[in-house]
Image 1: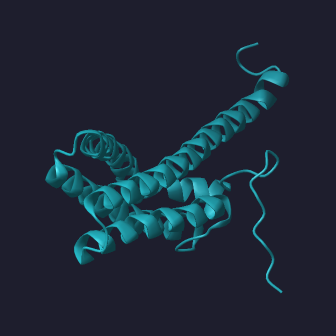
Image 2: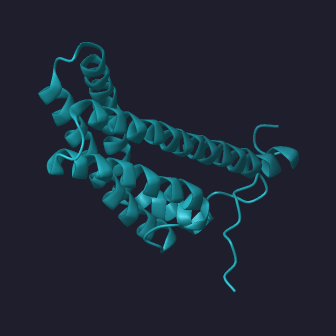
Length: 177
């Protein structure tokens, strides 16, 4: 019987020292650091265009193109993120520290992909397509929040580890005493 991955808790570090070193030494960390804010910027522009279309009925092409571009960037960040996960944790997806983020990412991908299918197949009217885009965007916001919280947890862990590393020298009356 397969064991369910444990949720991250305060007692369990997000990264082992070896994982942290691999994270810090791979170019894929920089790639993710560039793509994530780019994707968020494209999301914001696209959100405005989609909402404008829904409110006014104008700008159909711009709204549609923006969602397609957002989806292509999403695919790019998912592929490079999977490579990052393989380098850092040895698994392409669903590594212990990012299991739930990856699970929810699958929903994000499914909704964005569904949008592309309905647009290119012409299965819904444009308003329906835009509402589907908004559903995909809502899941993206939840998923982005998951990753931001994980990034914050990693930074807090690193600060705790740095403080713990400094404690013994100070407690023993190190050079600063």
